[in-house]
Amino acid sequence: MNDAMKLEAQRNWFKQAGYGMMVHWGLYALLAGEHRGRIARPYSEWIQSQFAIPNAEYERLAGIFNPIYFDADAWVRLAKDCGMRYVVVTAKHHDGFAMYRSRVDRYNVVDATPFGRDVIGEIAEACDKHGLKLGLYYSQDLDWHEPNGGGYRSNHIRCCGVTWDNSWDFPDADKKNYDACFEGKILPQVEELLTGYGELCLMWFDVPMTLSEAQSRALYDTVRRHQPACLINSRLGNGAYDYVSLGDNEIPDAIPEDASEADPNAIDGFKRSPYGLYESACTLNDTWGFSAYDQNWKTPEQIAANRARLRGLGINYLLNVGPDGLGRITAPAVDLLRRAAELSEK
Image (cartoon, rainbow, N blue to C red; front, side, top):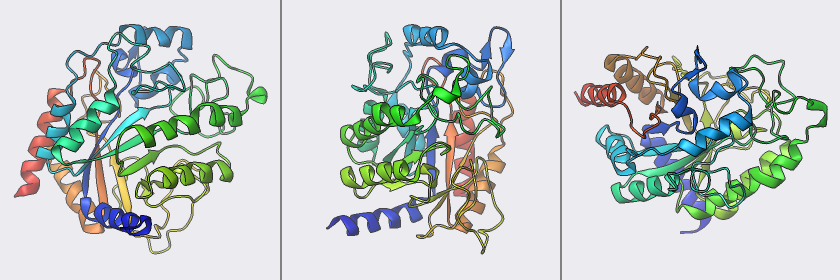
């Protein structure tokens, strides 16, 4: 089977997959949504930006990150038991911390923590064992650990933190050069992920705000070169994608007939997929990362209804869990997923 045929087969698989698990997990899980008596809302994974936590302080979380209850096999078995066909995990979120062993930057779960284990590697092995496909989330624009991390051109847009970029450690936006971050970290880390963890079903990029058209194309071409059948979501930016990521928690009534290309600097935007491939990433409560304070859980009936509606529209349902600082998908989340799966089977 040649590369074009493999890509077509992957697109056909994605169209039939229907249901997947997303996992937001990183150093922010240790804070559990709270910093110095203040609660991060709505998104706990944005806590560094919301409270302008300096890197010198935030980095200390790595020194105590030791999730002794992390069990990749249990995570993947849960997804499979609930009828999910693929798992998408945060390899690097906006805080810049890699959940795998990166040789590009030692700010990662193997080199910077007492845990010392490659989270992405263990999940990749578990997915292979249980027959689920693996996708990886990578924040290709925002990186708060980098002086030249992106987002600094878009701070007029409302966001979940102080600013899109790290303006508390690196306040002079006029001196920032995203090109340096892209060449020195972003592109090399994406290559690491594409070459180090077996076959990936997709790369899940996010919030394209600073990338030039050439940079989006460079990432797109890098994925195609290393993994010709790996799908790319529309949040890569600048119109380079295989499938459309809807807005966060978007459950539409229909796919608009006039859906068209969105502003490449927009955060979300329903656009037309050239291959009829769509996906909606949704939360179980209000946040993506773990928060001890967010108990606004959806009901099993809501989850089952959302799954049925999206399935009827041909849109994949990517349902997120936020494991805690010990590595556990918490009991309320597990119970909700299992009860929703039982309802969907009836």
